[in-house]
Length: 360
Image 1 (cartoon, rainbow, N blue to C red):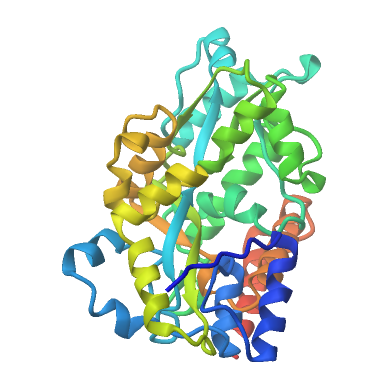
Image 2 (image 1 turned 180 degrees about the vertical axis):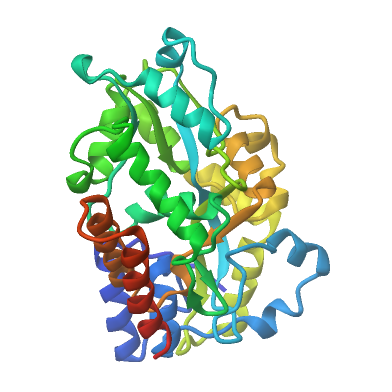
């Protein structure tokens, strides 16, 4: 059996998969973005893989345990192959200049950020992006605070981020932006490009980013001396995860051969080969133990954070029309941060919108 790979630009991939499915001649395997998985599952474009997973060796299943291998309506729809949890990038020179240690708790983060902020000299502690586009922004910039406050985003198929802990997390973000004023101006309109440019310019101390950001920063500014640390701990340590899966198409004609490929790509060996070729970060926990990740001063932090955080939560993979829900969440966060609603009102309204979609 020959493996033929078709590399489709991301902007075209979603519609291309839909078109091929409608034509009755899809590929055997697709790589849906996290925000498409439930859409494709509900539309019958991809098959559940529960029965296949049940036949895997126990050791391999254990290596794949985690937030991306959970059920949606009783089924699992994709083999996780890449992973990226959020950690904290920091500018070593700015911290050294201000005689500030890398913060490990919320309290330390606030104290350090106040010392590192000097608007008159265009110095800020934290850069982020809270624009509605790209809709992934809230996963980087807001949801980790809710998790660190002891809250959860999803539980038993429902949005539960409007808990007292969720309110506490959102209020902490508001304090950073509106009380302590330690963030770069214009966050409501800033996208990922602007956030990364702010950090690479060398006048911002902290940025929340995934492992893909290492290469991005090295390319943007090869002279920038930065480090990476776990996100500061609130009531608990916590982070959110973005990642990708391989899925079997329902109308694929070579299901057994396709599964063999998924099985290999889910293995420690398969993911290591893939990561060495592409620069991605693995999901298989045994692959994470390879020196390529374990001994890298940047990537080892993501290994530690993924394995040892009190709570690690995946969002996209369990949401119908994920981008729409994240946009609504962002709008409500903006409503709170701009004073139009209380934190509780904003989160209640967002949760109501999410749960209506989740209940359909």
